Image 1 (cartoon, one colour):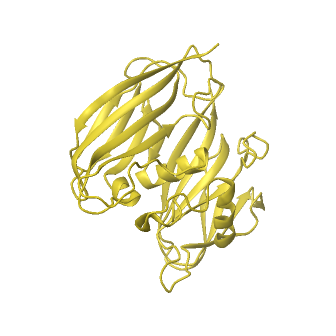
Image 2: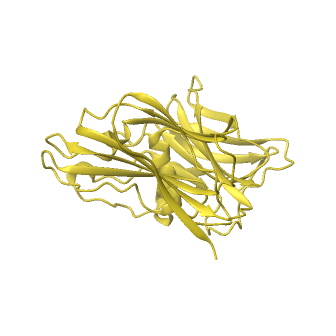
Length: 299
């Protein structure tokens, strides 16, 4: 029978503009919990405003990157894995109302899974780095907390690696290819766009997407963004909040290319031994795109 241990690494730290580096525990690690707390200024603090205070989250093991995400991409990853957006408390327009945002940094597709978590390490080998901006634009008296969940005596066979790549604007609309990492099974791609349909515009930064393995279409031969938005029902509710300022879907500018739709490894994108694995985006707008590659790494 497995046992877990939940511990506090950072307790009620006053929010500041800083890069905070933290040594993580040595036992197998299921996930990290980050919370931001404070009193909202006048109006309801939106999820986007909360996320703006966390610029980048990075976890590395002996210099190798395991997690490297902007907060918006972490929100997309959480929604994909847990079928719900990040929790924000007290979604009410009240001045000085106490609010909390919770973020989870995952090392497995399911929390508390002894078979898929980050394996045990030596003291100082596994580190968390948080690039933070002081709460203060829409939140007063900001506080930061960090906790971890270890799975004692676990012997995982895999862990999750999630790294965001910034795909530069190609210089024109139309097809834009970029290489995906080779070696591990790919669980999904989290695609975050700058341009998403809004007032008087139905434009997507990425209009269609496909995957090419050794120059052969694989899984996604042509997927339109409108249809990928429709697919989000498999991973989240169409609308999970009902305050005016949070009436859009969360995340509102992100779609997924999902290779684990049954959550049982049946369709994982296997890249080991391949010469080329690429994503091809047909760009509706000449702009940068943010792609998080979620990989299942063998221990």
